[in-house]
Every structure is written in C-alpha cells, then in structure tokens.
Amino acid sequence: MMLNADRNIIESTSPIIIYSDARWLKLIPASIYSSMGQHRLKELAKKGVIVGYSDLDSKRGDWIFDKESLDKYRLRQAPQNIEEKLLAFKAKKGL
Image (cartoon, helix red, strand yellow):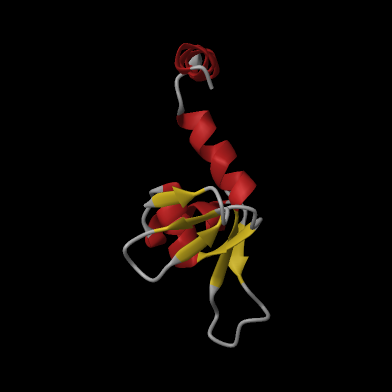
C-alpha cells in the first residue's frame, strides 16, 4: 500500500482504493485499513466492539464500518506508552 499525499488516497496493488478522509469503509477496504480479516471485522461489529453493520441501502447486504471505531480498537490494543513513543519518534525524525 502506498499513501499518495497529493491526492489524499491510499492505493494498493489491488483495485481497492481507500479514501483517507472517508468516515465509513466497506468490508474489504476496512479489512485492508485495519489489517484484520473480514470475518473478524464482522464478528467484532456483531459483539459491539467496533461500529459496523450490514448497510440497509445495499441490495447485496454489504457491510460498512466506522473508521474511527477501527482506530480506537487498534489503539486499545497498543501498549500504554505508544503515544509517547510516537511523539518521540516524530521528534527524532523532525516530523
């Protein structure tokens, strides 16, 4: 995957494009974005751990997921001092 800052999208070798400003992601882009399997995402949504559901506007029953809830879920899994490590890394790299 590659972040293209000029167009503000993330591209991969597959035909899937994830718009980084999008709040809601369909199943496959959400799986790529979160680095979790599709079954796992549905399972977590059904348990209420992340926000996701079968889109009522989709005739095929496509699932959609809230990107912010995916981020929060991943941050809860991170070590307690991850924020400090990220800030130190950015400072070291001059970001």
